[in-house]
Length: 91
Image (cartoon, rainbow, N blue to C red; front, side, top):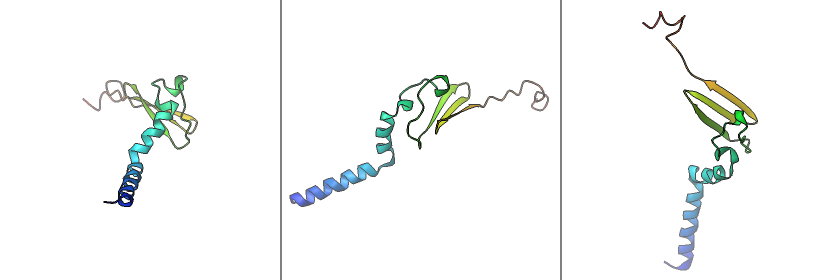
């Protein structure tokens, strides 16, 4: 293999590495302040700076926070079947 073929192999290899979906995204997320903190945006933590990035945080006990395009959405997925009016239906 001569030097031109070796250079072509290296360039193709680099192009394949950059084309891997997760690898280039990891570099962006390492620079994103919202991905570097555990503090929720709703409690004063960092919001995503990239407008195409959505940050999903698990806040424990089936509570989630979604931060996307300058907005915060808080989700509480807890469903208590022991309380009325659902207590009679599930026993």
